[in-house]
Length: 309
Image 1 (cartoon, helix red, strand yellow):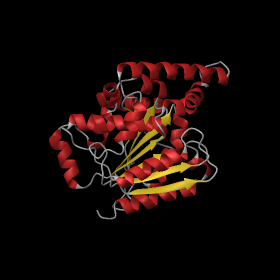
Image 2 (cartoon, rainbow, N blue to C red; image 1 turned 135 degrees about the vertical axis):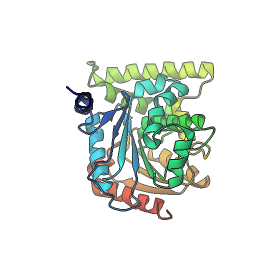
Image 3 (spheres, rainbow, N blue to C red; image 1 turned 90 degrees about the vertical axis):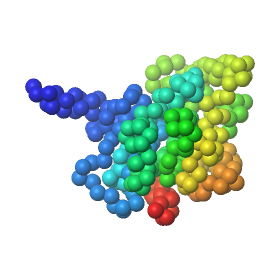
Image 4 (cartoon, rainbow, N blue to C red; image 1 turned 120 degrees about the vertical axis):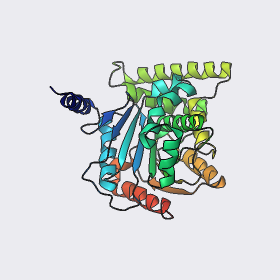
């Protein structure tokens, strides 16, 4: 077998092994890249060139694949980067560890991490980035990406044109969130943890309490608190990027009042904010029940986000 044939075989095997399906290249166990199909042409010259999708905590790849299909239909010529977001790992990792794990996302967006190459890509105006984060866990890993970029490039802000926040962010109060957070952990663990759901949730609640107590003792900021603040911090999150909040009053994990409070704070700080509320949908369930409203809102906000380009 020739060297090129061997390389092709390895790539093909890697794509078959990808939990997101054919066409995805595994960058790390959390990060997967799908280049734009060579035959695809943008439906508009201002379509995004790169889409980052941060899944919700412990989201299964087969569920995220439905969002990949939606973005492929909406923006067929975009490069897609999908980030899996394990909840437990996010909670015990330090910010530095999370940030290091997200470094490949930056290189996937801009190629080489060499400063000159990155500046050239940005200056060309041909790199238009759409970011979507789902639930608080997706937000935590996105915030880690923002931190990684800022540290790597001397305080610069990660450039993007639009941020979609689906079912996030919520309150960072431990007492208010112990129930919803432990429930989310139990939902993520039920596929591999054989105990009854109520027992799993109780164990998750005990773990969260211990983690919260340890953080309080050492004076450490929680991942949730850091991420909620980071998204409204112009030193970390691009102020010119248009923002779209997707949420519902029936979400039993992220409360709608907290989403609206965060959006109001963003407006006060100068961010341009759109909001779309869904009727009768559960946590991260808006796209499944109302696909036309969901993708229509994203397309509309993107068009407004790049209107000046």
